[in-house]
Length: 419
Image (cartoon, rainbow, N blue to C red; front, side):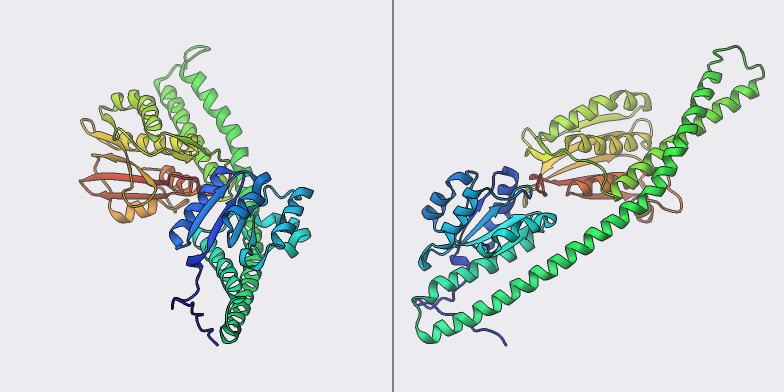
């Protein structure tokens, strides 16, 4: 049965749009992420504070409907925080605040001691839409409760019905999230286990491949005397080249397995993408010159600072630019460019070339982690795609036969996960 909307004296229905939200977190990236998720959702105001010791003053000053409180790394709250929650719970009806804990899914157990003082909890890793939706439900509950004391009998009954429905919805949401989080945890564990065997085999392969490559290099240079027949020199050179190629494939496969298993560590920090572009252009300038390819780095005077892993971003660009140089004929050019997205807080970094281009079906095949066969680009593009996704971004490749290729990396300005 649907619950009727509750009218106000002015004729408008009660909703979360009247609610004030206070985000209390010591982590600046977390505060920014939560505020950015909630601000467009129609709340009256969204405030943030990093001073948890003065939180009671902030609550009394803002009278928020919902306090989104960071529960840190899962450690138990100190006594003063427990006292703070108890004081918030005793606020009069017209200033009632619903405390919603922000915590990692695996640390929910630490909330049990203060569960009776909390209205809800939302995981750090929740998607933006889920974060906004859960906050909206909690805010609407408080808006309704604050209004119930001053409402007439008929309206108060409608309010109670709506509150009961919302409470039931929150219970179901929490139960569903707990179940899905557990299933995701098990799936990731299975994925990690499935990656252990091929990764260990590749580690075993790299040892003899390194030895073969090293011995072949010594023989190629004839360090201990001449090989004699020219055919021997050709064979040794072929052995060396083949072993080097196999080592590259083994290293690429290891990167794929690690990325798919989530075993690549990330270190997000703010950086200027123009600086990264310049360093990659400088690094690959000699390779471009030897290939007879013009390498250009272009960017406007100002591009938004990105909060991400610069080392991984550099690895992405080295993959893309190196691949573009390799398959661009002499006299061609490769261009690295960066621009701000005009609609969203995103930065787009592209690598374009004047090479022969590829049909769409070939591009799709190259983006697959492990295909039946990997054509010209090897595993480079698939590794790049996985790396970009690990950084919370999007990777797109546009190519046309005879018209070159454009690879675009789109990254959020703010780090998309709690660090």
